[in-house]
Structure formats: structure tokens, C-alpha cells
Length: 419
Image (cartoon, rainbow, N blue to C red; front, side, top):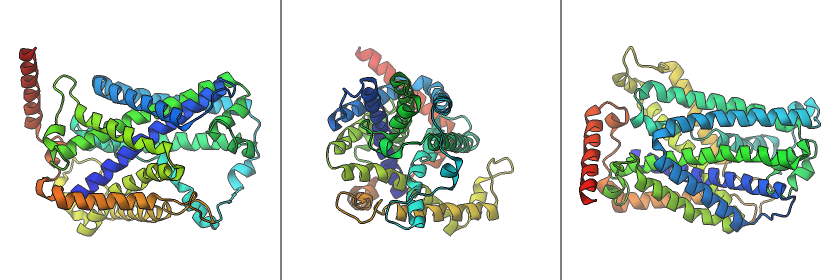
């Protein structure tokens, strides 16, 4: 079970790196179109090269900037809040406004599905914007009090993201005065066209677009951190090929450089899908939401089946974040039901009638991954995988941290002698 959940989570984070990186690249491309007054032409290969620049920047910064990672994450938080605030103030002060009835009481359904299914399909964008609840969990080994701080960070992330996201969506809707023109934009990003129509300024639009692009660059960096830490943990548990090689912490930079590079290689290769059929790339990046949600739901479902009483052996009177049996069970059922329903509908084609170019192939991506996972487990994983080491993850074995530090010092001394 832990092997399957681990790989589902890893693949979800690896595809999220691609998603965040290409969003950043597309915003940068759109900024180039606006700044050049249309002289810059968006092309798939150009966007891929920008994506590679974003990916490489994230790889280098997460490798050599580990010591300032905490400050970097704080900067990312403040930058995202600042971006939403600045963009909202500018748009509300410069744009013509739509009627509040359009924002709060109008439902336009042009998908071909009935209104209920169309509404559920629309949850995909919201789910993607708030995905990655577990990002902080992959840093628990580097936190002094993970049992308290990790859940707190998760709650804050959803709270801040949900609040700023809701505000920004409402601002966009109030400024949405020319929907056909926004959809037909030459920038490739309707939101950028909306900003341009609202401000009437190419310089202002370029500035705001780059602010949003930087938000996704920060997101790419964070996703690289999570994906590489997950790969390192799986290698430490002997769950991936060449686990001895990848379960390595660089003695100087104190990061798993080899799994960071592996993350870069994976995304550099699969990012090439952007140069092929659009449906293939969209299926690939859409799978991150389903995969990550599945990795959350399976442990919760296991807890429901086993019973929440199993948690009592790990809890004391001072344990933070205790929900109790009844309230916790209700929350567990809601979470599993949400993931079950949305995972099915997120595999539906976005519009009817369905054609080859409009089909949603994310179920095919999930199926290919399932075949790979089962085959890898049968051929290799079941013989080597040792399971997660919870005492290390929860920070309950400080002697291992000390041993790791001593090993790092020995490696430094060996390198010094070699030099």
C-alpha cells in the first residue's frame, strides 16, 4: 500500500512541476506578445524553451539555495498575496464593470453536458489551484516540531490560497466585459487579454503578467523541492532503481542533488509532449490533480477501514490537531467521497459531442501509470522496498540525524583529501 501511494504521489508531483513550469512559460510568452505589440509570435518550441529555462532555474535555486529555502518560501507567499492585491486594485480602478447579476447569478453552459455535470467539470480548475496540500509534509524531516507545524502550514496554505483565489476570480468576473475578444486573444492566455482590455496599457499589462508568471515560477520551485524529496525518501526506502545512488545527500549543499537532477530530466523529457498533440499534453498535466488527490484519499480510506482508534497509540494529551472519533470520521468520509466523485468526472471529455481532438485522455494516462506501477512492483519493488521509516519522518530518531551529519562530515574530509 505504501509503495503504491508513494509512487502515485511522486508521479502527481512530477507532473505538477510540468504544469507549474508551463503556466509560467505561457505567461512569459504572453508578456512578450503584449510588450512587442504583437510582433512576437507564440510558438510551441519557444514556449518549451522558456519552460526549460524556468525548470533549470528552479533546479539550480533549489540545489544551491537550500540554506535560504525558508526565506524563499516566505517571499513566495508574500509575492503571491502582493500580486493578487496589485492586480485587483489596478483592474478594479481601470476597467469597465459588469453587472453583479452576471457575476453572482448567471450560469453559462456551452459544454453540451447538463448543468450539474458542467459544474462538476468546472471544479477541475479550482482543484488544480489548491492542489499540493502535502507539500510541507515532504519537509517534515527538516522541521523541529513537524506534528504541530506541518498541519498548521497546510491549513494556512489552503486558507490563504482559497481567500486570494476567490478575490481574484471575483475581480476577473467583474472586469469581464468582452468574452469573445478575450477567448480569441493572440497572447494564448485569456487572462492577459482581460488585463490588457481593462488597463489599456501594454506596459502595465506586461508588468502584471510578469508578476503572475513569477508566482508560477515560485510554484515550480516548490514542486521541484517536493518531487525531489519524495524521490529521495523512496530511494532511502529502496523503492526505486539504483536506490543506493539516489538516496544521497550532498555533504556541502545538504540536499538530494541526484533526485533534483532526476526531477529535471523527467520534466525535460515529458515536457516535449507540448510539441506534440495538444490533447496528449493536456491529459498529462491534468493527471496531476487526480494522482495527488488519490494519494491523499487512499490513506484516509485505509484509516476508515481500520478504524480511527488506531490513532490513539500515537496520540497523547499534548498531541495537537486531534479531531476525535466522530468528527474525524465525518471529515474522512467527506474527503474520500469528494476525491471519488471528482476523479471520475475529471476523466470526462470537456464538451459534447466528443471528437478525437476534444477527448479527455487522462484516463489513458492513469491506466498507463497503473500498468507501470504493477509491473515495477512485480519485477523489482516487492524484493527491495522496505516501507516508510515513520520514526525518521516524524523526527523521533535524532541519533539518525546526528549520524547523517557525521557521515556528511566524513565525506567532506574525504573530498578535501582528494583535492
